[in-house]
Length: 357
Image (cartoon, rainbow, N blue to C red; front, side, top):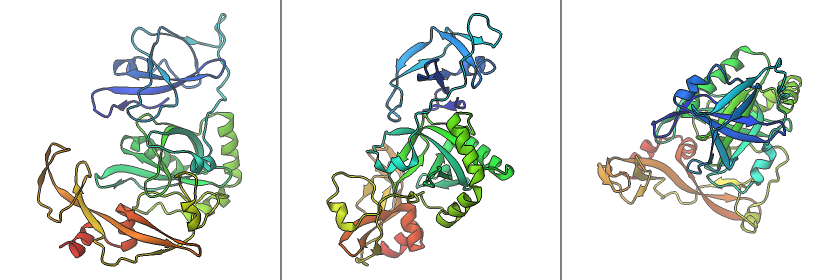
């Protein structure tokens, strides 16, 4: 069960739920506006209900690739009856045990697109502070996740997920044991590496009571010292750069020459020397502060953006070309945005002042 949220256009409030029947088949349900308050005291986690006359609709694909093809709408005309243990006709269902999760070690092998959504179950190792990231200064918080195979990923909770992020951070500050989260409908980002991030339909549960989660919680208790030492060695939560993947244990590191012969596009792990051969490149571009469209100009005066359909400003964005070199070959790539600023130890504004004025 998710928490009440606002739609991207701010026109309505909604709340997501995952329902499961006696055969452990699952479907997403949604409540809107007044129904959220109407059912707040009635619908509780791990309770059994007889639900009839719910509306059934095709899942929208505007904000991602949904896990469920259909979803239910629980509205004023939906009949919801709580099945209590004392009910003589219907008996409550046993606690749910089915999870359609994607393991962390499998994520690098997925054919990822911008709409892909997955469910994960993982231990929270580290929690970064709330901050404002990106050129649009969106509010976010970064978490280092781990599984029982010691694979690690960074997860970013964006914007209105700050409330659950604060809850997790508070629990980590006062509880002796590590926290396990079940994250549903999260996205995979390939920007500056491979990482995880919240999506419009994402939900999160802290220390859920699924058998798989209980097993992972117990494993985390037994291996807490080892897990925290690995997190401190490999991950920094104080960094202001966009999160990048921490290479999972057991993943194959390939040579640069093998990248060109790879059968498909994807994420590759390489060990290579990074070199900037073109020292006279500009190291930054100007782009629209709204739509982020790059412009071939060095003049920062306000202009009428045809895409944003309004007068806006041009802002600098760090981007530069590097060569990756190992013993087999050399390949060229680009580094941009916050990661580029960190490597150059300068902000995009500083870079623009030096190279473009």
